[in-house]
Length: 303
Image (cartoon, rainbow, N blue to C red):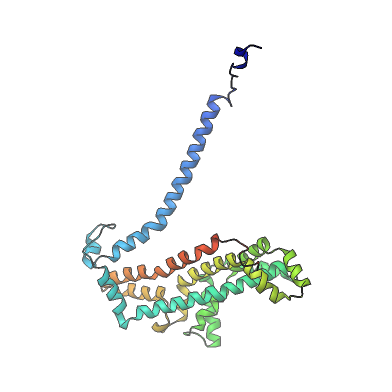
């Protein structure tokens, strides 16, 4: 066999007709462009209001209405913060502390109750299990504002209106958290592990706290964070339940200042600056807890 025959290159066959390959490239580009455009629009929808809040909080009343939305005016940021903290004897700090307490209580204890309920719905067998879980799913579909008036009537019967219990007791119930916890339990808590624990003599409670809860910790953190944000942003429940300004969360307190800003425009920079300060704990919570989502889903379950 000659060397010319061995060195002759083999002709490559085309992957497909040129028109088909060109259409596939065009279709892929259009799909990628559409997805990226939607992502950019979604990010702008969420980020631009916060950016405007930052710019607006640096302005005084005159610059707030006399300059562009995304432009700095005469520096007044620290003056606005001082006005917020000193208004009404520093009631803003009390409102922030109230919101932190309500949200942390709902996140820790409400999230734990949701995890325990979801774990029970997944791992235990009892009469009426599917019916009860169906009621939980119905609770997911009902908006929170629709339950405010019935809860107020119940709270008035027990005489707990205008107390912290009128806020703390409702935040312990989170139907969506129960549903999410059942999904986590079904996916990340093997039945074989619990069976081995029962063989070793562990009861249901010990099995949950020693095995189930550590395995579901990323789900618990997720549910707790959702609950924290939901309670922090809750407006209708404290608005209806509470009359004492010393018990109000920051969301309702700022709305009161917003009402003052109509006849007194000097309250407007305070409302904007207070709104900016009120989102700082949410940002801190997201930054501090995101590492738990990235950790292994079974971290802590193995000694």
